[in-house]
Length: 311
Ligand SMILES: [Zn+2]
Image (cartoon, rainbow, N blue to C red; front, top):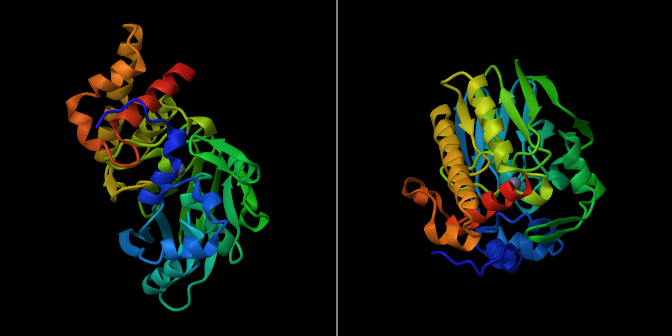
């Protein structure tokens, strides 16, 4: 369905209700009882990825977990009301007591850091400097205003370009890619287990949300994913921010989609076509199936257009 009358701001509420992806849930958590109820039907499932690494899925961003003799490390932590379900899921994959040692955040959005307020009490939270900066100040995004997070939810260890944690027998390396999905993205490389957690730089088989109001850029995403594809072994397992467990080949296809979308919008801009006309035309047919309820084709074209016009 193509409609040009829809704008981000007017759709924030229904997007939240429909998907719970909701960056704005940062604000929605102001009513914890309602939020708790809204999450009561969510199921958290655990999948062994490779080596020490598991993936937890359910509403919100995918969680990466390192499990071993040093304890547990989480990459992202979904929404606060899911904390008990996440703990229950961890206790199924951990031998004995769950000893959480570190939490890494891939970026500041509420569907990835919402659980910080719970897990930050158990272990230090680590993130790029801009994650702490954005979480501690009022943000105006395409979805409306997100109020500052409580101090106990903020990352206590911040880094610039990268940080390594030597944990469970491997180097877990967090590397910052500037201006991708946001301006505070970190991609997490489990170098021994041969797994990479992409955060929201990667939506698997889906048009991605790119948060232009948080410093995101479609060219930045292409640059980051291209560099990662060149860097990881070809048989690495890929945890996307959203969507199913993926492969390096899936990342290559994702880059193709991004590049063809940019080429389509760029050509349109050069030909003097309006955004309305581009949306009516639609992206190349091959990618039409990447549309989903949160980012349909019209929104995707709008994001790419906005990113190219801004750059
Ligand atoms: Zn995000």
